[in-house]
Length: 137
Image 1 (cartoon, rainbow, N blue to C red):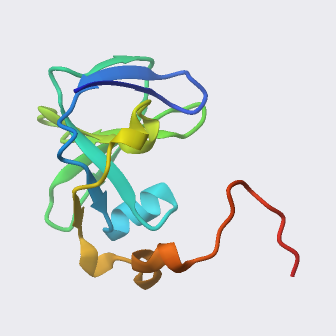
Image 2: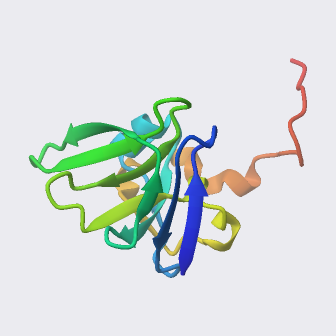
């Protein structure tokens, strides 16, 4: 499936080929910290198919194993775009939230569940609203 996406401010846009049957929710501590959220949702894309307009900033994280992973994000608005092996970027992990077809990309697997926040598994039971409401305490 060919997809397109952009950062929040539009300074970075891109296209890529993905397999919509491989959409992952990652619960690792790095993804939690790098997103400022409970998890990250990614879809792999071939590096050959990835075409980007704009210049993301790269931050390379070195895992406990010694493996390197570069995190690309917009220098203007901070939107995370993708991650890849900096020495061999044959495959990128695109951030699903940046894709125009994100509603069509249903997660098919969850990884690093040992790091999942306990409440992340039961969000359907949390009351909500269609849009943001101001809650009084």
